[in-house]
Image 1 (tube, one colour):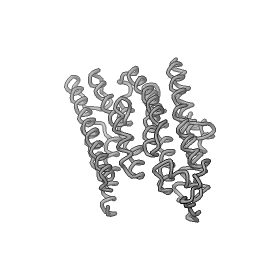
Image 2 (spheres, helix red, strand yellow):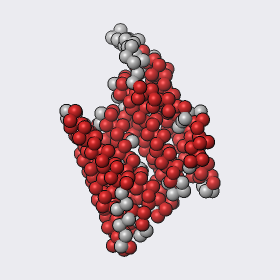
Image 3 (cartoon, helix red, strand yellow):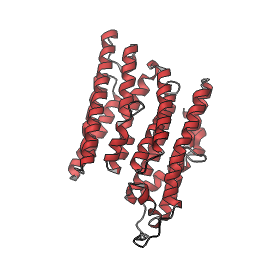
Image 4 (cartoon, helix red, strand yellow):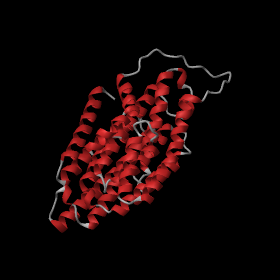
Length: 346
């Protein structure tokens, strides 16, 4: 793909995201989502591999269906109330259809099936965009309509997402699929709190974006796609592998790393809302995620590759670590001490 084409597609992505997050009218939000979908498709299928073409087709079909549902729910609401304003979504049927549409856009259970397949067929850099930038417009729509949505349905979908994201990630050997299930699990944490404290959902999304970007960019610099190849990378860049270990534990939500902060605040807020059962359930389900993050971390830093005769030891390279990766990893592991400041903002 030529640099000019890449520039056009990335600019379109930024434009589509900006239009959706800054719009008040449903048609403008829908147009932004469509621009986003059309801009990411060439980036998914740029390798021309059959798996990449399949991923792009699956992505297009699910996103087109979700966009249709967004348009349908807004039209139904406008028909009954005469309002096209996003924050004025009040009709119960419209709210239900919109919840399904946004869940499909994000990859929440039970509309999660497309996401691991699409991520597996995409390059790592496009996978990063799919896991972070492409999730931002639907989450802002959730944020703006959160007072009208059905809380019980959202909590149920959130707990199922945390359960399935953790459960289905246990058996994977492909790193992109593991990160896809990790994303589904994190979306569960964001969705459970959206009706009670929407700002917490956004905070969780920002920190998740930081940590996921650090992991994806590190893996991209290693050129690693499978657990078996991840085992040999520590000989090339030991320091970066050690930092990847910490970033993965941060994604798992272990204190004293950054990833503990959103989980801690969400559990605190759920407890304030007398939702003790939901808080305990989702906390227990995050242990499933912890298991596969530990597996990734173990492969990245602790496991020695098998010493067979045909095994070539990789040479240690003196290539400096990118400044972007260094900043992201630092922020992914060391932001917990500023939690008092963050909690005052929220």
